[in-house]
Amino acid sequence: MELVKALILGVVQGLTEFLPVSSSGHLELAKWILQDDSIAAESMLMTVSLHAATALATLVVFRREVMEILRDLLKFTWNEGTRFSWFIVLSMIPAAIVGVLFDDMLEALFDRQIVLVALMLIVTGFLLFLADRAQETDQKVSWKSALLIGLAQAVAILPGISRSGATISTSVLLGVDRERAARFSFLMVVPLILGKMAKDLLEGDFTGATPLLELGVGFVAAFLTGMLACVWMIRLVKRAELKWFAYYCFAVAGIVLLFRLIFSY
Image (cartoon, rainbow, N blue to C red):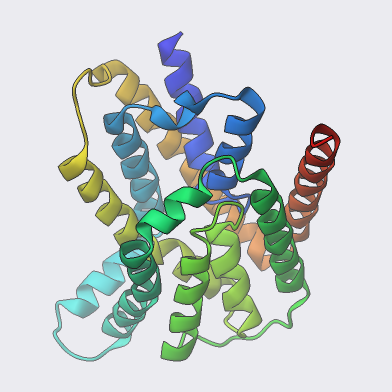
């Protein structure tokens, strides 16, 4: 039974890390529906393992780009690789500032605030819909767009705002080439995932740690589904088919608001 649970956790992590449906928002909705906070209390080692799997999936999918960036960085000159790396660092600043300064305030938002989740899912849906309708261009990421994409990532800390949806949509709306937008969105989150893993390892309580077999099952499931979701998402962005996720976000938000209205009386 525990192995099945680890498998499900891995699949969910692998999908929601890349697909624009807001994993944090769905977690809050699940907690509200089940009236159970234990969902958020999974083993810290399992959490770290799943994050490591999705980070590795990103690096594998973009292995050529990563190797090119590393080669450029080792030249110790200002080139395409150092430029791209600088933009990734720049994009991380807003989320890092929000996470450090407003940590306690943000925690209050992750307490079954389902109306907030529904409203933010609607915002996500509109962003995805607008991104699909945006005019295609061949522009690259600039320092200005990197900063604005980083601001979108910071806003995506809110439950219901999809990180990948917000960053990719913002990139496309700023005129960045669709494939470049997806690549930048997925690569920019790797340092943040690694930072969160380090934070969890330093602050985590590992008493009663998850058995190695369960960690392995969760890791492999998250890694494989993460690679599939990442490749699929890139294709959807290029084909301007994000609207289907927009419709999904609208539908979930509508159902949640309707149920909240019914059960408030």
